[in-house]
Image 1 (cartoon, rainbow, N blue to C red):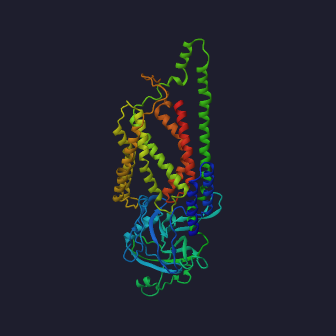
Image 2 (tube, rainbow, N blue to C red; image 1 turned 135 degrees about the horizontal axis):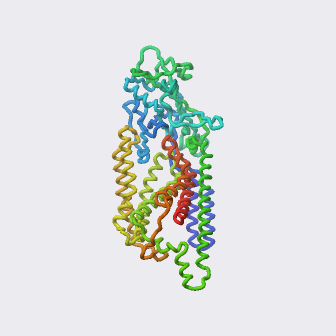
Image 3 (cartoon, helix red, strand yellow; image 1 turned 180 degrees about the horizontal axis):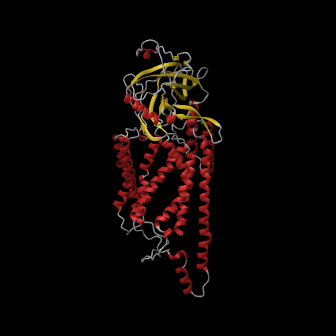
Length: 597
């Protein structure tokens, strides 16, 4: 690989020197050949940019715990809100990037310790004495269906489960985390504590023997899978309990054999009702060799929803039908109505006066002198157009980067960080477009400074206000989704320290250019608009015009919101990009239809 890299550099440098003496077609052909040679020498690489971590045999590792999530609520809670086992010295909250904090993720150390490529069964994590309050808190979380999430080598732990599709056929998939309890009985009245965790780690060997890297790189293991399986075990032990045996792994359990694991037929541990109880937490660590390559280890997480592909294609077909319908309506307007009007304008009249009268009083020319008249709230319209450009630019660039693979889930928090940065950077085109329209609406009560300030603060201010009040609710519920005060300050610094100056700079460029001139002259006296029927008034027209664009995106919007609510990975950005393109064309065509009719 190093030899290929040096060779590519030498090829490019040599070609640059050679092309100084070449011009025209020969130069272009040489560069095309160079690019083909460069691609031929290139090898596959992992776009997200997360470097693989190799573990030597016996190297100590620690499983990290993440937030607890449930499909029944979008709220997330800290893992240690329940009195689980803590590492020696207490849990330590690990640093996270801005995207992870905004997503509500909190990563902490745990008491689950393992060693690379070393299988151990029936290891004791700790023995907890739960009070009535602890039992009640656990019952509340378990009754809501919460699952505990873990992470190892940047891989989220997942439970292997069997699902049934609509045809009754079984298929194997994964669910993130593991359930903290199992429910049974009428209305799930009985809860069993999942106090035994089986951790299966799939690894891929890195063997450098017989290669050029044998002298400089040691063999090791790359982690390519992290599976969790929780179960409830009512542990029993011989003699008096001693907490030191957990550290030395010498506890004599009657319900768990260090050679074979949990003894078959062991009773589960039922959660007591309003009573103090003791809970012994144990775990197994099993290492299994896998042929999966390190670059493909995220495939199982991204294919967790493979059965939904047909629905996405149905959504694309549905959106395409709507688009074809609108295209047909626009074509009808252009080919029939406008053609008829043009025919009237160009027909031969007996006199010049009759021809002028026909041109002025029929068809779309009736309103040609009022089309570019500034509206009542011209300044607000200019601000909305600028904010729309900002949101659209952020969306298109984000989806583009995601389609190329730069915003992979393995690079945690990258999606939210990219959206935030792109929204801030799109402040310059927002200010520019808003200033251009503001200048075009001259004489309509527009003010340059007010226009710039509203473009920089109106839409972001509304979003931040809603976000702040929702954050207060999350603070009250003690959810990890609540953004810390320091993060709110950082967002405000992004807003006023970077976005606001960019909007002012874009506005400065927009006001410097010449005003956009209308293609037709605007009449000095507005034409009187006749009384419209009820369905052509503003509110019904807005509702009717919004139905078709919503019909284009509602299926994809459902999956996006479901992924947020159910804490799943969304990585179908190809579908999203296609739907966005259809949405843009649909909005343009529905605008033509509604304006003409």
